[in-house]
Structure formats: C-alpha cells, structure tokens
Length: 318
Image (tube, rainbow, N blue to C red; front, side):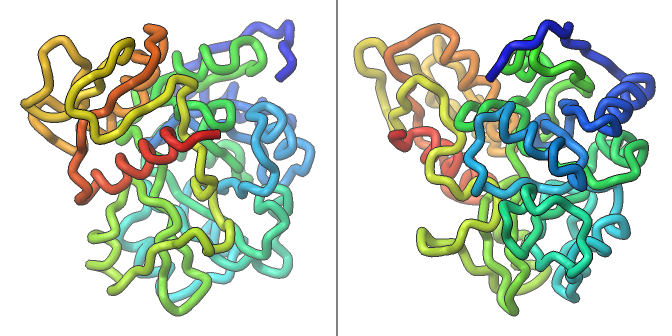
C-alpha cells in the first residue's frame, strides 16, 4: 500500500457525516462505524472507487464486498427480492445480517464489488451514524472491514487509523463497535437458505424465523466475504483450545477460570461481551510482541460459533 502525504482526518457527528459523504461522492474512500466493525466505504456504483478498496486492503479480487444502504427499499432495486428476504429483513434489519441475492439485470453496482458474480451481498446496518452517512450519500456503499486483508478487523476508529495511517483521508468516529463481529451472511439464492458466514445473528435465531438453514461447506462457491480460509488473522500465531501457555505465549482467556494476569474476553462467560472484545483484545496482545497467543476454549453455541469461526480462520496457516 502506498503512503500518501494527505493528513488523515478523524471526524465525528453530523459534520463528520457531511465530510465523509463528500469524500465518498468524489470517488474516495472513507472509513465509518457500524454496529459490527468499522467499514472501508466506497461508492458501490463507481468501478474506480471500488477498485480503491481492493488496492487499500490488498484484498483478493475474487472475494465479494458487502453493499450497504440506509433502508430495505434502497436495496430492493439492486437484487431479486424474495419472500425469504422479506421475512428476514422484517425480523433482523436494520442489523448485523447480510443477504446474498441475485443481482437484477440493470443493477448499477460495479461488477467488481460482486467479484464478477451474478449475486450481490447486501445489508442495512443498525447504527444510526452509519445510516445517516448512507442517507447522505444517496447511493449504495460497498464496505468491507476497514483493515488490510488478513488482518484483525477494527472495532474502533483508532484501530483504523493505526491500520492505514495517512493513506486514508477520512475516518468517521462512532466510538467502539457494539457487537465487534462481522455480520452473519446468508445465501438466499436457492429455496433453502444457507449460512455462508457466522456472525452477529446466530443460526438458531435465523431458523426461528425461516426454518432450517443449511451451512456452507468447503465446496460451496465463494459468494461473500469471510469464505476465504485465512481472513481474520493477526501476524502472531494462535493456538486454540489452550488450557495453559507455552514458553513465549500470552493467554487470551474466557470465563471465571482465567488466570488473573491474562486478558479475559468475558470474566462472566458472556458470549456477547466476548464477541465485542475479540478483535480489540487480539490486537492488544499482538502489540506486546509474544511468540504466540494461546486462546482458552470458548463454547460453540450461539455467538460462540462465530467467535470460534473467527479464531479458526485466524489460526489457519497462510
């Protein structure tokens, strides 16, 4: 990534929304908060702007981007809507759930944003500040997480600033992310919904609305972010299901059994709290420069499925 001489600007509130929207309308990149993680936004209808996302992130171009809008109506014209989409949107939008649906024949979104596929990943975030920005733009915004590809996803404006330095001219600061995990992604292109990426909405909650939901396998075609095996990775090796540390390692704990000196995702064993702390604590531990990070076992239920999915991907060798 090339370094620019432009000074990075941290902006806030409605004035910050205006500044970030102006950058996006001009074809530039702006980082902005959502309830999940911070996104690196560009005008989804502008091929050059979308290409800047891939350039900034160093991202594989075959990994599709999620397209965001302020409301369901703004997205319905981009994709072939369905009764399943209506049911899930009514239950979970605005919120941390992304739909993958067929693109319409006249969809104005850059094909680069969907990696040349005939499908599109779409979402309406719940954070008011994010929706204010999307309304100000008046076009769909493509926005993956605001980090270099393969690095830990950012949950604060400071994380974004440290990741990109002066390369990014505007960061809209909305405080720490409320959820701290990326959105759940569900494929709605067939009669049976398929979970492509675990996230802020659990499979159990989805099934309470639409019935049985399948789960993507290694053979499932790449349709959304998060399906590359190594995607959420610190540069420090991770060792999962650890009970103790090995020489040179630091411990990332979970629950009341964690040694007092270790960072703890949740002292009480609360999976929601653990999800919100995950990426920030991984960053903090990595900055200490250990030989490795040992991660204590985390339950594989509810949001624990998404947490374990992120950790598994982070631990996968490049």
